[in-house]
Image (cartoon, rainbow, N blue to C red; front, top):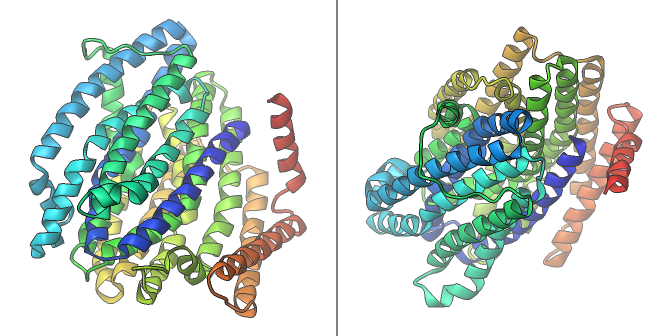
Length: 513
């Protein structure tokens, strides 16, 4: 599991770095105004479907089933099963894409109802979303191919595919903008072109793995019905945070102009630890847990869960602390240039602090959910997800008035904490999760080490003078390095983790390679 986590984590880190470069360019060219709001809404709908039906619910239902067929009936039967599922997905996603493009104005009323008060903004959002909407079908199929590769324990290609999304967006922004009405149009075309490139990359990787798929006449076989039946509830169970983000966009469209963009920029920074840690651990964990559950090895499954939770906490606690303490310098260094003003920095950094509070809980949700899916249970995460969604709505209504966009971000963190807590409580009551001695001993010490790091970050931020231009980056890098050093030393002194053990695992991985 650790080797797979490192593989997925590396490619995810590369993608996130390129994503930051993309967002820096977007902030410079679009700022937090009307065109930016319209583009982020245009990106939101296909991206929401990708995370719900592609990476989330599909993988949760497909990978355990694919792994089971592969283990019991062999590669030929597993390929046939993947072909049957893919053929049904092509028809369903194709119809959905056509309907979405035709009825986009009606969908926009639901997705961003506040835009209707500004006709030009509403019309621009409709046009941009029609351009990006084919990305929905392309990237969901890409996620399906990635599920096949993950089931074969091949993680690199699927983890690297999002790099193409960022590269195409950057290229479109730099080179396509002069030939289209605005930079928003260029970005929208870049999104769709990137979907084609990602699908081709995954198809090539599957061919190399000896799992090239053919399109069959779609049939709802019993195995396909089982995947679809489990996939339906998983849309809510795995995707509750994505639904919350969609709700955030809907509500933010009623707030002052730029609120949608403020939440986007803050959430993009917040997604760095979520993407690298949460998606990475969840992706590597599900196939392993599925195999252990099917092999009736409960002790191995318990050990796997405890080590996955430890790994998540050891990275998310300092990440959340760092984002909260350094919110202003991080946002300033990344985005304050061009059309992105000082007032945008203030609003975005406040939302980032609120999002950062929910980082550990959000990642733990991605670690805990595979424990249900490996056992074929998608119903329980659905019920917990619905409850978390209601919690999010209640706190949005309570906090959006006094806090604006920051209140929406705070509600998302509260909802994530509720979600993770309920999943953990249910697993423990069923006996599917037991915190062993190592986890019980190390978790509080990790929290103390993160607190020590926060103190060092605050002192360094006040003590190191602020410069301009490149000096901003140097200053931020120095402060982050000081915080990492403080966390590492505090963790070693408090015995929260063992850096030598982690280095040993990395060394063993290199020797195997």
